[in-house]
Length: 358
Image 1: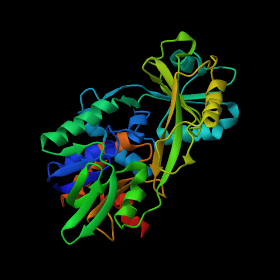
Image 2: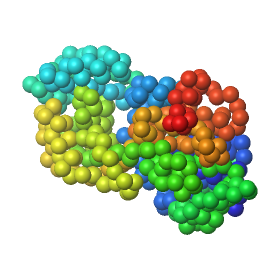
Image 3: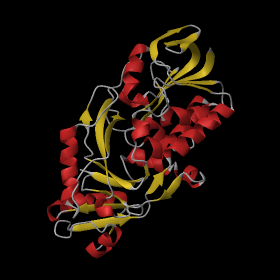
């Protein structure tokens, strides 16, 4: 089966790109797992906070704002709070400045999150510009758009070999053999492995594990309207989730690409940091899991054609920002592959380009 664009990876990056590219030509998506968004995309904290991340990430996320405003039902109010002990004032101030928080009194903070411990928490700040993302609704919306224009989205299609000749790319997978004019590498933690299979120089991506735990609603509280909370410098975070609370140690431990699972010791340490700030103890876990947040060497996404092999297109290194930046990222993919002037500014295009690695 032949296509103009063959996308390797069925997370939010690959599926949003499929939607955009389906207006420009034939598209095939190959996802190794039995379902879309099995890895990092399916384990996201699902928050739209466009001020979160490196400057290029923030710019890409801000450029996604208009899409989200027009996407009915995808966003819902959440809010975001940072809390810190007295000895963490410098890190607290840095977070407040970077993410445009407003300092609030302890009484105001406890009105929003009544289990904050006033004997430990010395500083608190809040922002109302963070919103929950209905990640499944967003993903399925992009998938429907792609399919409506004839895109083929195949699961259980693990890539085993990639070769290029004068006719284009040949990709052998567990779902069959496919040929294409262009390859879009959106394979998450596996992007360097896919590049190596294609004979393209890997760029040094780092898959970093992040563990998560779901705990019962503390003290039986209704947590549905609590903001997402995090410690100074993001050394833990907690977020309401389906009547419970998810808590993460926010670790970044380098891993080989794999189906990640939580590290019990790291999880316990993170839960202890969270618990120190609260009046309610953690008594049990409902579930735990982990995901791999994959970063480039400079922690900025890589979007663009490989400088040595222009028919191999990188869509990689989204880290923890894939959902909040995907509308603008996927539009940039279509602009570049469609030969159109990008809607985002030239400086940001250059900052995202793989050419920056030489």
